[in-house]
Image 1 (cartoon, rainbow, N blue to C red):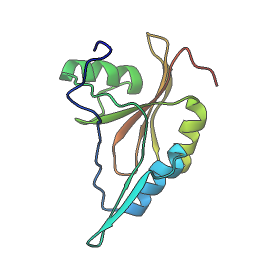
Image 2 (image 1 turned 180 degrees about the vertical axis):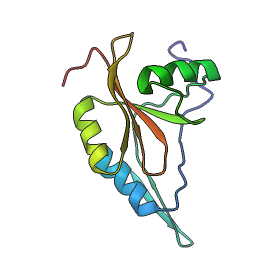
Image 3 (image 1 turned 45 degrees about the vertical axis):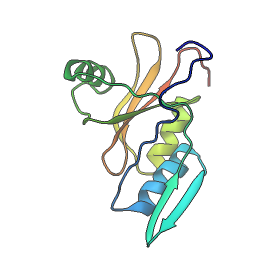
Image 4 (image 1 turned 135 degrees about the horizontal axis):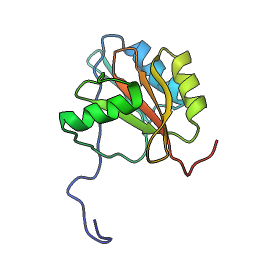
Length: 138
């Protein structure tokens, strides 16, 4: 979009609903090394918001999802939603998430475009790709 033009959407938020709030908030806060930006407690319910940086929405057809899954995990494994998080240090981010309950779906791979990607799964089964851009160093 050209500079000076307004965008019809200002922010993307993804809301995860879980049966184990404490486990999942610990996974994402401790696993990503983040502090909550906001915390809400409404009518006995709990919620928190993490500010994770720039957001984009990718829309894949089944064939593209299969191509990416095959590249990152060796076979079609993700559901209709998968997180892809760019991190500055893939190894340390992967280690933190694994220490906080992630399951390694597939070890790191180098993509055809030069990034390093690793596929993990959160404690509720959400597929997560961590990626480090080829232009970044540890």
